[in-house]
Image 1: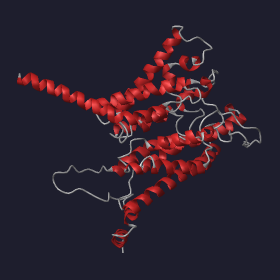
Image 2: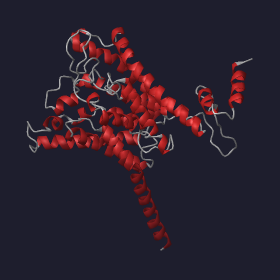
Image 3: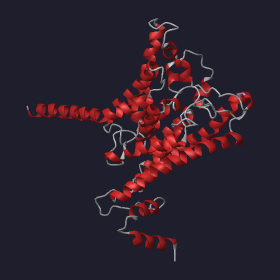
Image 4: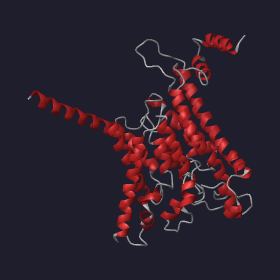
Length: 398
């Protein structure tokens, strides 16, 4: 008996049982969608929600692999010196795998487990939305985050942030950012500071050399403390710097964004307008410094004096713009609304990172804020279009 026939028999066996939705989710993961359209009125192609999600995951795989190498590079480099450490080495990759793979497993295990439970209890198909969220979550985490904290946060994000709203397509906030916000506001010491971005750099944890905790301060953390930045523009752009697992390499993030735009998955309007918004806010701050309004030694001087274009290649702003601001569920839906939505995300991201020294990174809060206001933005865009059409109608009938 063929594999196809065996799968068909199993599908018939589970039909009408509590396990039907769980089996269908596994059965259709690498095969056809569970439901297909029929009749001449439907546009038929190979695209479905599962394939859209898989495309986004493919755009993040290079960033994930780079993050594994960078985890080892930062760890061994802080101990032995970066001049003596090559980036693409087996030692770096092994350390990255041992630290990041468990985070990935917990993210998918807990998240998909809850999705399967809800599908079984509510008797609906397992939704594919968490396929992307499960990959996003590890990429926006510090390297040494305790796994039990991650599990609790993922459970909160899936149940409270998505399922209570009705599941995929109904949530008003980006689930991955909801998970990160939950972690930040409950365990801030594990999500910020200068000792969380490098493996073995948490207070009280010895590194492999048996010495005291390593300092893994990010560039934004240094600027917030009015310190000098010890990294070149090349290092910042390529990603050879401390930071969240997948947020350091602007180069690979740009490639991922281009891939999403060319495949029609990501919104170019949101990405470009967010970059412009961030640049405008950065230019305003640079202008305040150049004009003498903000003097050297002032509280926000270093972050305001930081060149506006370098703001775009450090921190999580590039990652947030490409992979999170473009979430089709929680983002604005109208074309004009996407431009406004993206611009405000970039604008507020730089504003928050400058004016919040305790947390010198603003893209998470900016995206969550605009997620809430996205329906309002779309509403006023639609109403403006209606008013313009009504005026044209009055002119024609006059």
